[in-house]
Image (cartoon, rainbow, N blue to C red; front, side, top):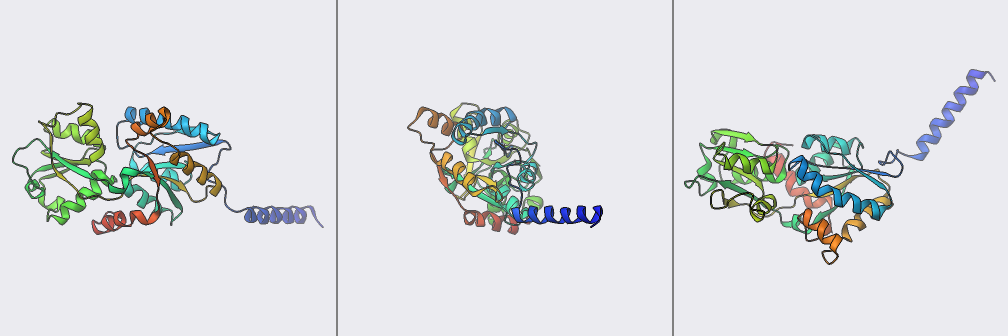
Length: 289
């Protein structure tokens, strides 16, 4: 047998062995868990919230945990779909986008207990604005175009109220983040804005906004929202360990309470793909998917 024939046989054997071994795991760097999150708040706030949680996961999993911020919502979707990260914090809409984009190859592990009944709020400084219909002819800001609570669901409820944003509003703006929407409304750059109800409550509690000046005039019905998601190619055993680590966070322990408070959560609970079918339907109905 010639040298070329031997090399060819060896290449075929290696290819066969590689196929038998199955796809490469999502965790491309041994001993490292790569994490990202949608940029729904300022980079400094996201980093502040992430640090204790990343340290906790590292301790629980016995892995180095690397948190990498992304510039926009689409980047978080692409990062998980392309297995550039192993674990991502998604809104309901970004999860749906990742699920569709990957052909069903992402797995939602947990969500906050609050995410089973999440709400958006519409805020304004204009005393004449009392209902969604009053927004006709006004300048209104959403958050990111890919935000569930800052765009998709508020848009969905506007449509249900007979307000078609591009037709009925004077101007549609996108601030990029919930805190930026509050700032735009407070500064009078727009007459109203829609955002995550949890972020609004945090700003009021921390006295970063005066509710006597900027007020909520409409709160949406509840819907499922945020979750922590992994790629389906991640080993099932590691998926289970990550899920268990989140479920073990309890407010009774000082560490658990500190982490949960930063995440604006009372606890984490299991979740599933079916919880986000309503989000997917709203996205398709609004022409956003």
